[in-house]
Amino acid sequence: MILLIENNLKSAESIGDFLSNQNIEIDFAFNGVSGFELASKNKYEVIIMNIELTKLNGLALCHKIRNELFISTPIIFLSDKDDIQDKIAAFSAGADDFIVSPLSYDELHCRVKALSLRGPRRDIGQQTVAKLKIDYNLRTVTCNDTTVKLHFLQMNILKVLVQHYPNTVSRRMLEQEIWGEESPASAPLRTHIYRLRIALEKPFQQPVIDTVYGQGYHLVHPF
Image 1 (cartoon, rainbow, N blue to C red):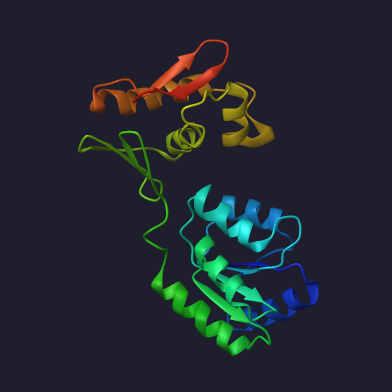
Image 2 (cartoon, rainbow, N blue to C red):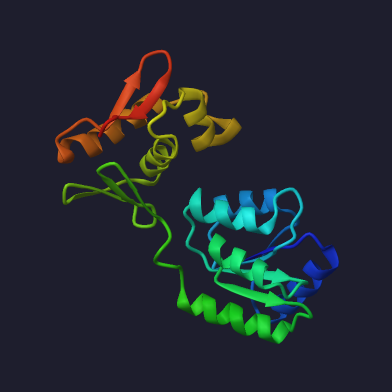
């Protein structure tokens, strides 16, 4: 499955039709915000995006995909301008390829296949916070040479706490980040926090998550 993020409807249809004829399944987004939402919810082999997107431009979107979602999917930029500064900015933001119009669909197909065969990048999805070394792709947390593998939901909770470290994250914010606006009526966050604590603190032999009563949760600081 390929994600194509292109605000020019005609171009999106042409690229989509060509790749579909090559037996490639396509998912579409027509602006940067919707592209970010799809990238956060689904797994893709390659992401293709126009550098000049509306609502959220391509450079900002690529940076958010790499540094907020920690997604390692290869990214191809499309541009109408052969501008070296745009290329430098794109690769700095986390791009893997950059194609300038006029676009050759055969060339695009070849590059999509090459990146798909290469697979996800290995330099994305790892983060170090204090003593914690986190690999979001493997869902592992390492502290003092001890490594723990977490469940998906546990890793999602930890990711939010890490993103806001050393600040406190409210219960409501955690619920929205994990379940969105459709958070379950029972709101079992407290149970999942408890299980995450047990998963980390027993093997690491030290507190990791602290409760600030009436405010929320945060990673223990200093850690």
